[in-house]
Length: 605
Image (tube, rainbow, N blue to C red; front, side, top):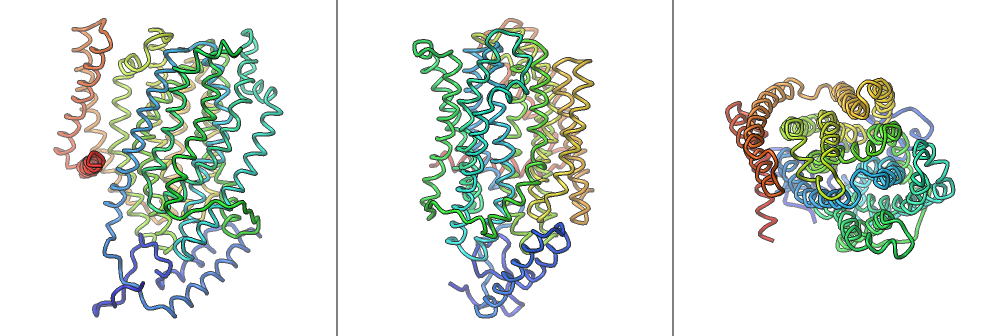
């Protein structure tokens, strides 16, 4: 329904967060010209621009025939809305990440850093690599802007049709990849882990688990499409919580199926491989019921000529390269680590999981909440609001990630000991994993910034730039790893990856700043300096607290470890908060307020 008539003070303004189909402004006429300047002049893009020109004419005619729409009374400033949405995602993701820690604890308890665990992580790396490249991150970043534009301009029915088209296309594409992977599992595994052949049955076990886990790719691709649709509708909680189903599947299987596997003629670790596939099914189920409540109905329908589908798949091509730097770098680490002896693959994997925890809980939350907002700003050609949203997101990330980096470096060994050191995970494994975690930690800031920068390029209709930067980052990482692994062993692989991640972020942000005529660099730099000072003081306080506890309880049990690590983290948070207030870091107060608000709402439910 049309809103109230415009005020006499001027023409009505449309909120960029408004998803009404008829919310058309004169600014929309600039979109096609902007796309003409920024998108590569290929034959496909020429056809795309022609179709967008037709769409613009239809939208203009609708705007002339329809009464003007009043501004939404519920719209919020983009900064506050972004922080609130990030808090929603953060709470759900926190639940999933806590379960992920329990999952890793269970795996470490049953299998430690043994040959079986090395084999599982290499086998899982293969479908997980394809998942990361072709499904979750890249697909969501390419899909959400297109889905949001169709939702805004044509309504939900048209958007649902596009979602169905994408799901079916992903099933066909990933199904073909899975079939090829099953057939060629042996040469594929030998390519990644040829050194495993030196240990009896280690390579063969890796091949068997690879074949079992490959269907996980198709399931997670469909789950990622569901996530993209829900995020476009600003339904963040269920998609962020869905990975918890994967973690629950592995936890239950570790305790229930692992003891039963030998009776069925399988190695105990095979229970975890079967659980990976069940976890993929759970991720779809956790989101599909929410989509049905929103009105989505799945149909067996695939039209390769659909303009929106072609646009998404066209962005996914270079977007796969752009978003794949981290995954390819991890694959390089895995390949080189297979020659570093038993346990090296597991040490690096455990360390990466801990390093990625703050990114998964906080960095991904901010990026997930920002992408639909950025897409609406780009659709309206509002570069000023895009700059403000990106700048605000970067400052929030710095406020959260810089202290997290310092904290993980200072408390690497106590944290690893507390989480993993039990069962088959030995004190030697703790020390080795902690060293890898210390080297990985600087990547937290880099990966978080990339999570926001790459989708910003997609929202602008530009995927070639991040793709080229990604290729350069992979080359840098390979060179660094080949050099550092000879000097530092497996630790050099983690350090090389961290350096490459920071370089990737720096290049992307510099190019994004040029594309948007600046990113409020002076404000971001000033904020970073103040955050770095606060984090340094925090790190010193935490180190002193750790030394004090270690001197009094050198050989502590689990409960004392929980008390000491919890106390050290509390000391760090108190000191960080005091320094943030002293230095006037507004992002700290805003982040704390939004998280507290969301937690209180969650408890009230």
